[in-house]
Structures are given as structure tokens and as C-alpha cells.
Amino acid sequence: MNIKADILIIGAGGAGCRAAIESSNYNPEAKIVILNQGPVGRSGLTVMANGGMRWVSHPDDSPFNLFQDILEVGCYLNEQNLVEVLTEEGPQRAEELIQWGAKELIYAEKSRSGGRSPDDPGRGQSYPRSHYIPGVTYMAALRNQLERRSNITVIEDAIATKLLVAGNRAVGAIVLNIRTGEIFLVEAKATVLASGGLGELFANSDNCPFGMRGHASGMGYALAYHAGAELIDMEMVQFTGNQLYPPWLLGNPALLVSMCGGKYINALGEEFMKLPLPRDAIQRLAYKEIKEGRGTERGGVYIDLTASPLSREEIEEQLKLSLAVEIGKERWKLIQEMSADNPDPRNWKIEFTPGGAHFFMGGVKINEKCETNIEGLYAAGEVSGGVHGANRMGGNALVEIIVFGARAGRYAGEFAKNVDWTKPEECLLKDEHERLMGFFKERGVNANTLIDRLAILMANKVGVARTEGELKKALAEIEYLRTNYLPQVRAARGLRYNLGWVEAIQISYMLDLAEMITRSAIFRTESRGAHYREDFPESDSSWLKHTRIMKKDGTINLGTAPITVTKLNLGGRK
Image 1 (tube, helix red, strand yellow):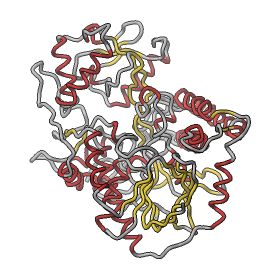
Image 2 (cartoon, helix red, strand yellow):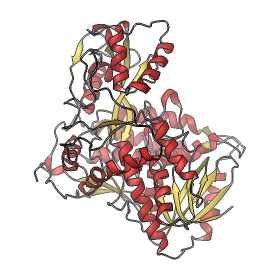
Image 3 (cartoon, helix red, strand yellow):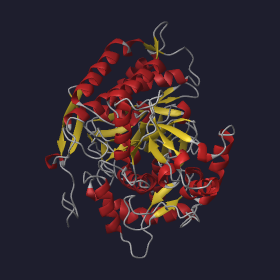
């Protein structure tokens, strides 16, 4: 079932769908193939998003004001050319999405109890910019647009296992059809990588609530690395509070403090911090309590609502306000059902761990056209690096994916229209087929066992707070797993819907990704944004540069790359 496509898009979340739509708009005659690991619009991370978005809409605001705020939150590690694109094009892309049928829900300006709105000072915003388009309606609008375009072919339940490069040009990918077990080639003039994030690399992550793994393995980063792409800032993992008990899908637990009057307390009942604080500071202070022996048996701390001055009705109102009133009402019903044995929120102590992997700021290096250093390979969304610097401002991810998804699709379409076909080497499909079929062994180790072990290792040693000693122990353990366990990874026989086979394919890439993150974290000998080194607790102006990774002679080559500066110098001045 080998396929020829003008444009191949890997991933059908917000960035991938938007890329396909834009490529089709640019050239309705082009053949566009989009791969997704599950059903489009019903799998992946975009559809799970609560929906908070930020773009310029206040009459006194401007793209430059937002530009400044993003750089300040990102600790000036951002690629300024990319931030310019985000701030200038965000309103247009968001309005387009709404016109396509995505439903924008409205935040209440203020509650009767006088609680804070999402745009209050202390949240990184100089002007009100909060908007709310839940992931479900966001993706429904994009899927509807895909279905309107006859030149787009969607292949669901499929993963790319290898990017193909001839010389320095991307020429397609080798693909596993999970439904059938067939391994085939997609030959393409241009390829867009839009494969999303890597939260599953850590034991606690809101990317895979209740342990539902499979769509945030970070495989795309490793595919790009092995193809020869340049990656930047691989140490920059954004962590947030991951709820341990009760196991609700609440969203950001910090809202229970900032908007509901709760307090952060340790297992001894002591309050250990007060808001407002940036997200990374909250995680570090909670980590400190646990490390110093004041955490719970589950390895967490508490958000204590028993200390709230608000009534039960006022707490309910605040939670609805935090999520936009319509969806907040439905979320509150779910929380009530899941807390039937303790329904009064004034009695709640919510247990959370600070090491929940939430978002990844690093990734494949791109320019404002979403071009990588490999000709014909484009990247957009969370798999790309440079937009958010050392810390992502809340609300920017869902804007980023449609802004840069559209750009990747436009420029990939332009490239494909103006080049001839370059055929991949025939032996590559045969070699990859043999590698993938080699996982069917009589005896060995199940991949999910190895994934669990790696995730615990990354959470314990490459998490919220890092030291050279612990990072080097992690590196040694990663190598031990690669040497002693990876060759034994097996999948049970059976080609159709064999998710154990998918995990066996993913784990080798996850080990590569873990090594890249760990080596970059060792290399950056300072603290900046989400990257906190206990042995280097201060920021160092000499480190206002990217860490950079490329594959050289089969191994990770680590260095630095300058930051692109367009409007502000690295001290924040014009």
C-alpha cells in the first residue's frame, strides 16, 4: 500500500489539521495525506484541552504588549521572530476557527463573591486577553474543515516509525497501520511534523489522565533527531500540579487557591506558600516540602479548602468562573458525582504532586516559515521549539498550534508545488520492516514495563528540581535500560490493533528522548524558567542562548545556538 503524496502531515491535533487545511487552500490540486495515531478529533491532546486561549482583543492592547509579556514569562529565551508571528496572527486565526464553528465560551468578568478573574494581575498579563474555546469544539471545527476538502486523505490509527531523508531533503516516512499491521511507505515532496508533546515520559502527567497513555510519547522529537534535524532547549519541561487524590479531572489545582480561597499546606498542616507566584515557583516550593520530609505518604502536599472564607455556593461559582460558565457547570456536576461521599468543598483537602509534566517548550528548531534545517521538513505545535522560551505563558498553546500549523501548511504546500519527486532508497523500507517485525520474539520484556520504569526514573531525577549528581545517575540508568532491556523488548504476536507492538516501537525513541532531555539539563548550568538546578539556583546572563542537539556519528552532539532577536534586547529593552 505504498502511497505518493505532495504533502505528508504527521499528527492530526490542532497543528496537523490546520496545516492540512492551509495546504489544501493554497493548492486544491495537491494530494495531502495526514496520519494520526487515533481517530481525528477524538484522540490526542488538543481535544482534551480545557480551552483557555489568549490573543489581543482589548482596544488599548497591542501585539507588542503581548510580545513583551511572553518574553518576560519565557525568561527571554524565546525566538523573537516566532513570538512576533504568534502575537500578530493569533487574533486572525482564532476568529477563523470561530467562523468555522468552534464555540467560544465567555468568562464571567467577576463573581458575586469578589473572586479573581483569569485576567487579574499576577498571571503574566498586562491587559485582559482571556478567551475560551474548549478542545472538543476546537477540534470539531477543524475536523469539519478537513472533511470538506477532497484532496485530503486521513489515515487514522497509524504512526510514522521513520522519517526518510535523501541527501538533506525529507522525502517521506515509513508508516505502521495499527488497524491492519501493514507497514508501508508514504513518499512525499514535503513533510510536516505535528506530532505533539512528551508528557508520558514522566510518571505523573496531565497529558495522560488516569494513566491513559499512547498519544504523548514524544516520538516525533526522536524521529526528527534521527533524521538529522536540529533540536533546541530540550531541558525545558513545564511541570504543574498533578492531582493524586481525589482523582478528579479538575484542571489546574492551583485554581482552588487563587480563585477559591484555599491554602497550600504540607502533611503537618503548615501553610508553605502564598500566591501570586508563577507556575514554576509553585512547583519548586511544593517539591521542597516533600523533599524535606513534610509530604504525604503518596508523595504530595495539599490544597486545603477547609481554610477558605467562601461558602459552598461561592466555591462552586468560582470554579465555574475559572473554566467559563458553561463548561464549568458541567465540570462541577462531574466533581459532585465523584465526591458523593464528601460533597461539601469546605471539607476538601486536595492532594497533589508538583512533578506533573504538562508542556514542553523545547523541540525541533524552526524559522518563521516553520522550516527546519532539513529541506522539505516542517514542524509546528508542541513538537517545535523556540516560541515559549523557558516557560510557556498560560493560554498560548492553543493559539500557537493554529498560527504555526497554518504557516507550516502554507510553506510546505509552496515547497511541494515547486520541486520534483526525489525517490527514497528502496532498501530503507525493507530494513525498517525487518526492524519492526523483530519485536515478535518468543520471550522477552513487555515494553510497558520498561516505559513505566523510565517514567519513574525521569520523574525522580529529571523533574522539578535537578542536580548534576542526580542527572548523571539518570543518564547512567537510561544507558543501562537501553543496553540491558531494550534488546529484549518483545510484542505478543498479532498484527491487528497490537498496542503492545506500538509501545515496543515507541520505547526506543522514548529512551533517546530521555537522554536528550537529561544531557541538556546537565549542560545548562543555571536555573531559568522551568529548568531549575539546585546546584546552580540563579540565572546566568551568559546562558541567554539555546542548548542545541543534533545527531553526529550516531550519537548526541550537544552545543549552543544564539537566540533570534528582533525587537527587544535580552534585557527586555527596545
